[in-house]
Image (tube, rainbow, N blue to C red; front, side):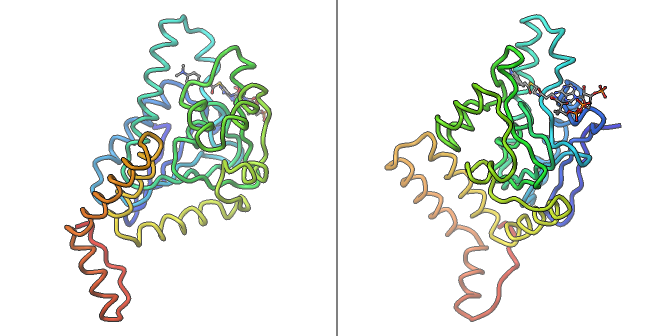
Length: 259
Ligand code: DAK
């Protein structure tokens, strides 16, 4: 039995962390299954959107597994950390947009998993927090970096130093999530967004994603050069030619081929 379910249909995949009895906490087995699932998704040539969620009604992911972490010595902790980081990095490298559908607790490593996605939708039951400092550790799967980039150092500092739990509506106000919906609407909303993305030119979407993240590292001049190069690249694609021709012919166009 795998701790990760993947359902792929019409270029959209739903990846579900499936350990509900432990509130989907990330132990080595869950992380291994997650890496295997993400590696398989990397091989899907025409994957256009990925939704990440947690099994059960209570929790997205309640963090790294405290039971497993508690017995580690410092060398084992380093290995666990490197392994977990490689899994999150593999997710970050997925070329298509990744949507987190946060269906309950997103704590510690679970909050970081949501932050490693491009877009976050939350159910009204979502709760975000970094309990790490209360456990004598720092966030280790990118939380200090990604929350500070997303919301600024003031918000990141408060939430990481205090471990305060944030409800979905506050997460929306802070810019942590894009939208809050009722729990029974969460997957439908995520699918609707995924379908809207999948309906666009995949090469253009993937290049736009790459350019958006490059903005975190490049000067504005370098970023504009990169954007111009990606823009030029689109003019080598069949999708650009066919979509613009359809516009000029006054035809609806939804037939992007990823070519
Ligand atoms: N680890 C292990 N088990 C967990 C867990 C977790 N994080 N969260 C929940 N569970 C388990 C509970 O132990 C319980 O198991 P049983 O007792 O039934 O066997 C089951 O899930 C149900 O949980 P509760 O009975 O506690 O349910 P409640 O509704 O009463 O409470 C709760 C729900 C989410 C408020 C509570 O379970 C809770 O506070 N959980 C711990 C949340 C937490 O502190 N998470 C952050 C972990 S620290 C690093 C990389 C990553 C990290 C650090 C470093 N490096 C690269 C260096 C990440 C660290 C973390 O995520």
